[in-house]
Amino acid sequence: MRFQLFHRLVDPGSARVRQFVVEHELTAEVKFRNVSFDEPLAELKARGADDRVPALWDGEQLFVGAEAVIARLRAHLDVGRGK
Image: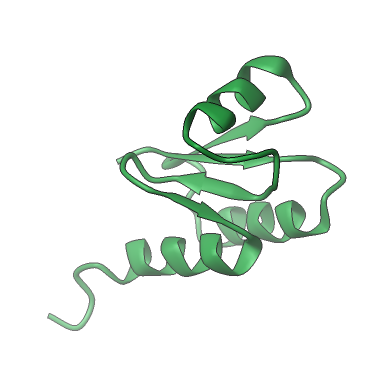
């Protein structure tokens, strides 16, 4: 699975999520998409969102806001634990 993280460099919530991705070694699984550029912004809007960031596309659903994005990434990390 490859996640797409729609973000802005100057957005504090985006920075928090990027830090989470790096700290939890998810950089190979999360593609950063800076919505300051036209193409990523158009792709975010095509998924039914406005320009709010951070937003995470997991291939099926869009999660908007730092808390929702981090919760989704935590769920991904938890898969298979406890077995």
